[in-house]
Image (cartoon, rainbow, N blue to C red; front, side, top):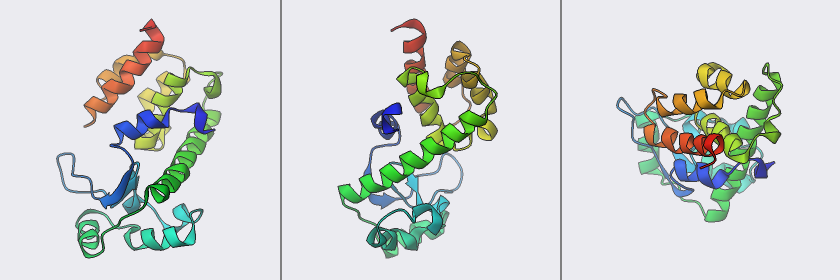
Length: 186
């Protein structure tokens, strides 16, 4: 299943696989994120259920940060720095990538589409997965984009990514470049 998507591309967009916990700076307003580790794994948005598939020793390291966001996350991280090995960070990545892809495939199966996600060009699958990895539930969080990709409207999706109206212009433009490459063969 992991070969369906170019996770290295998504990791690059997410800032890489971090082994030292951090709280991402806000996109203009107040800090809403939690302690983030591995490739964009925000512990502030997670519960014990979300990490139960990880080894017990890793669960113990992550648990103090679960559900904490904003200043609470910042203070906890100062009190108790979170440092992982590369292997531990990759275990988290494997879990989060699998979860994101399973959720995306469930949404895709429920969509009104005759297109089989697995048979799309890998660059198109990667772009959809990238937006899903960041936003989660695409049908509700990015309905215009979701409608475009599930109805094979790639030119519209390309232009949408160029003007997505979020705070991630650089990321969206890199995703758009992948879509353009498929559409125009460049």
